[in-house]
Image 1: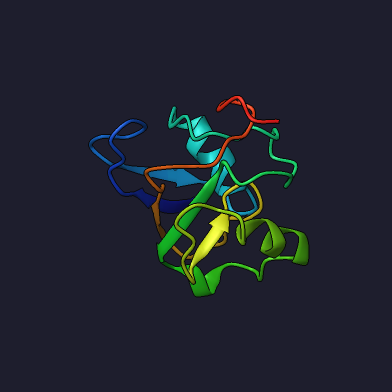
Image 2 (image 1 turned 120 degrees about the horizontal axis):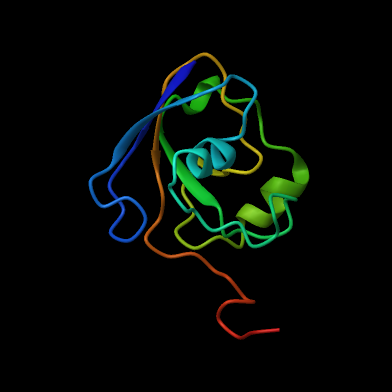
Length: 113
């Protein structure tokens, strides 16, 4: 098991959390498994940016993002050099510290088409 430290998020995880994830599991899957209800409007198919996270520690241990993920990340709110889509970033054996941005862009939820 690999430890993920989730930094506090006002709505999703006010106290922060420390969770365990299986290597090979996506960060999104690990968060959801531990009742941290991160948005994932496209059902983890790499078609939106609602599961955007910033990796504060352990970023270098993740496999490189594929081109589709990189293109979508360009549209994410609060993009940083260590941003990833949590549905695409697979946990390895290195502990991670993850920040869920305060806002996400969810066209369906916000009534945009």
